[in-house]
Image (cartoon, rainbow, N blue to C red; front, top):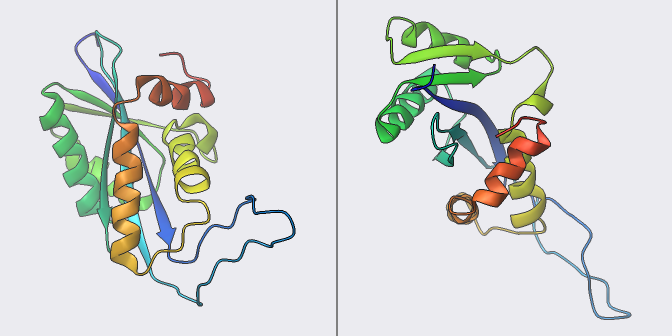
Length: 178
């Protein structure tokens, strides 16, 4: 449909334990990160949108203190649709929360749900966005607590919003033409 935008959707968890990546240090000095065994985490739901006419790519996200559930998925999809002001084709995997949210959206003509093939995360452009955030922006980052991690994750994702070239690269990584 020419007037319908597309929303690719996915979630991830971010841990307080740092994601250790290769880094640099002055010659002869070993880089050291000080942290303790912490299991707290936050969850993030994100969507990459592609407008029907202008082919503009957008990034939307929301952070949560618990695992993303059906209510959060439905609320997020409805929020993105209101922001765009046009009908959406929602593309997502078959996570139980996604299937339940799709059932709730089924009677609303503003939404059409399309499913990614099973075991095909490489077809979802949100996956490269997670990779860029986790292995780039938040690599070797040792947060003080979950709130600190949330602030940094929000800043990292917010910084991607205005970069059309970067957002388009996530579609290219998923082998999707924009």
